[in-house]
Image (cartoon, rainbow, N blue to C red; front, side, top):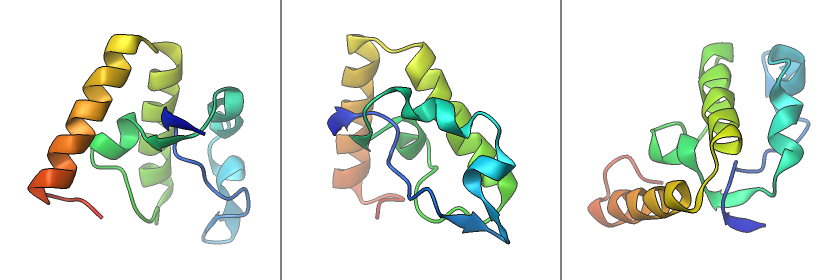
Length: 93
């Protein structure tokens, strides 16, 4: 596990009666990198339970954006935003 990267999910998580990889065809692409403690999706408000296919798609889109555009600078920005969210208490859990 790394500090920054897509958050790990159980492969058996469901939305309705379908697994995540059955809903979003690009779901497995997020496994190209190590999972992280924090990530781009989390600092953009996509954390916690995923109840709808649209929420899942938004989270996966941000994870894939992170993977495709990775840089040290992006990791630093995500770490700083994580600290701000955690210390402000806004939308953090």
